[in-house]
Length: 356
Image 1 (cartoon, rainbow, N blue to C red):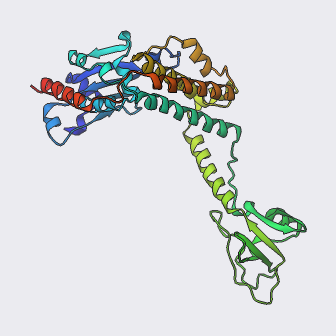
Image 2 (tube, rainbow, N blue to C red):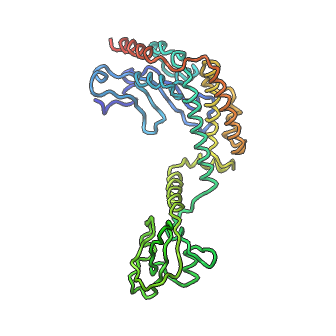
Image 3 (cartoon, rainbow, N blue to C red):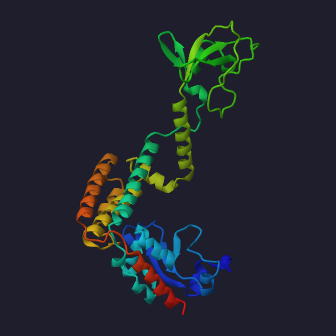
C-alpha cells in the first residue's frame, strides 16, 4: 500500500489537514515568474499509522509541494523550524484547506527564544551562501585542470621559477627527471636529470590524476642539477576549490545565475533578500511574539533582490540587523523553549480525535 501513497492519494482520501500556498507568494515577494510552492499537513490512514508503513513526509518530484504527517509537523514546530512555523500564520487568502482540528495548534504554544537561532541561524547560513557565490563569481576557475607540475618550483640562481618554465628554458622533459627527498626540508627534493632515459628515472608525475610527485632511485655518483619544491598544500586547496566550483557550475540555477550577473553585484541576490526577511522575522518574533508571513516591506526586500546594494554594504547591514536580533533576544519575554510535554499531549489528543 505504501507505494500508492502520494499527494493525489491524500487529496482523494481527504487526509489533508492543512494546505497552504507558501514561499514567495505567501511572503508577498512573488514576481510574475515565481513558482507556486505548496506546503501542508496530513494524517495517515489508520492501518498505515498503526502498521509498518508510517510515512513522515510526502513531496512531488520537484519538491515544491511538500506535506508533513501531523506528528512530524508538530515535532518540527517544537524545534521552531522557520518554514513550518510560518505555516501556522499563513495569510488567510493563501490557505487552501484547513481542517477544524488544526485550530488546536496555536502559534503561541510553539514560539520560543530558540527562534533566534532557527530564524537568525538560517539567515547566517544565507550570508555564508552569498559570500560563497561572491567568491565563485569573482574568482572563476578555468575548466582545464591544473596538475602537480603547476605547483612545482625549481631553485634558480638566488630565486625560483615554475617547473614548466624551467623545463622550457632548459629544453628538458619532466619524464626524464628523478627526485629524491631532501632530509629535514618538507616537500623539497633533489632534482636529477637523465637525458638518455637509461637510468630509469620516474619523472615528476605519470598520471594527470597524480596528487603528489614521484620519487626515483638515483645512482650515488649522480649530482643534482637543482632542487625542486612542491607546494602540496596549495595543490590540495586548488583541487578542493576546483571540485566545488565546477560542481556549483553544474548544479546552479541558470536563470538565477544570469539574474545575479545582470545586476552586476556578484552575489546571490535572492538568498540575500531572504536573509533580511528572516532577520526581520526573528526580531519580530522575539519582541512581539508574533509571526508576520506577509511582508509589508516588499519594495525594500525586492530592491535587495534586484541588486540595489553593493555586496559589502549588504553584509554591513546584515551585521547590524544581527545585533538587533541579539538585543531583542536579551529582552524577549518568550519561553526559553517549547513545552514538549504539552506538545506531545496535543498530538495524542489530535490523533485520538482522528482515529476514533
